[in-house]
Image (cartoon, rainbow, N blue to C red; front, side):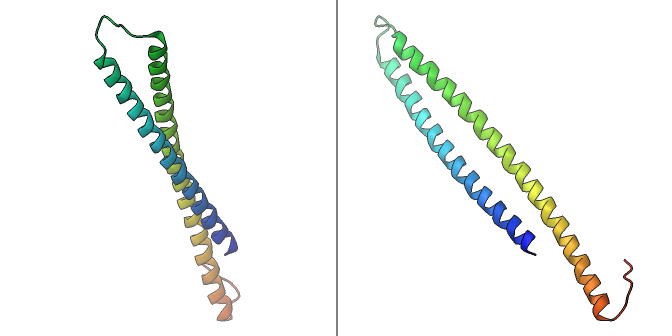
Amino acid sequence: MATVEATIRQRDKIKEQLQETNEALKTYLKELQKMRKYFIDFMNERSPSEGTSDKAALRYKKLEEDNNRLRNLLKTQLENSENLRLETQHTVETLREEFNVLIKVGVWVTLGIDEYEE
């Protein structure tokens, strides 16, 4: 029973960490989108004769790379979350089955029957 509780506590802790990570990634992604919008708006306000600066172009490219990296990281986090959910579900089901067998065996022993047949 302590194993079940420890597994549940561990699952809850990991879920909480995953949620915090997801929220941080979403916040960072929103900030990147704001910066991208600002940059695009800034570039659209400039006249064609001014051209674009290399520094601004590099900054934009860096933002795009960060955006792609964050999208991949978020996708990975979601996949990991699903894998963790499936593993936890399997563990809980296995422990539930074992617990039910222990209860059945305990009932047989309580009734004074030496052998338990499923």
